[in-house]
Amino acid sequence: MEKRPKNLRFAVLAADTAIFKFTNGRLLVRLIKVNRPPHFTNHWGLPGGLILPKETADEAARRHSREKGAIKQMYLEQLYTFSGINRDPRGRVVAVAYLAIDKKNDINYNLGTTPENSPCWFSIKKLPRLAYDHKKIIQVALERLRAKLSYTNIAFALLPNEFTFGELRNLYEIILGRRFDRRNFRKKFLSLDLIRPTEKERLGAANRPAALYRFRKQSLTVANII
Image 1 (cartoon, rainbow, N blue to C red):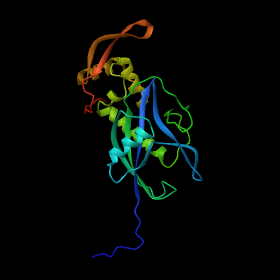
Image 2: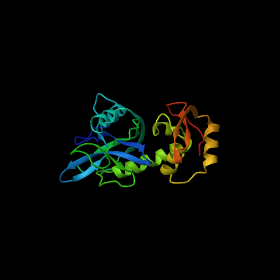
Image 3: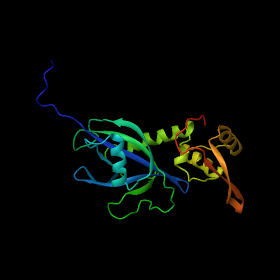
Image 4: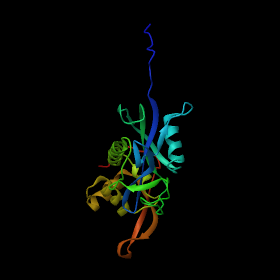
């Protein structure tokens, strides 16, 4: 039997979550203040923290998102394990990272300005100074989100319950960074039977009525969208 080293040390496990929101034509990410002198001063980071012995990684991600990020209802999926030796200057910490989407599609939010130590939304295109390896986590989460948009109905978590085709196409164009032909995009989405008309309308550009749609399922479904 192999003898156990006397100086054996273990890494601690943490859960960090990149929480996205899409509103007013912008993709946002939820961040919290990080002040850990002398390593980090006036930095920002993802809601997260240690995983307790009594909870799973998923439970820890939801707890930290709720207690530190003030996000209660969200789509959540495990993203990747970040285990860089020096990712945390205070000690050996391995992070189980998550991708999440805030399912509360409100338009009242503070962008980059909140009371001291309060969580805040930042545009994905204009991030503040980030602590640890959280910039990398956000990049990986964004890559996953873009991929999911191409082969699943994950847009259901990013849009309001009722939306126009223009809003759906706008979501895809902004997050994927490319333009889509209006007619072809509409034809493809309707052929997949992922959404249904609501028989309601909303005034759009030039006060023209635009039909409203809903996703048939509020859960992840695989589909060849792009």
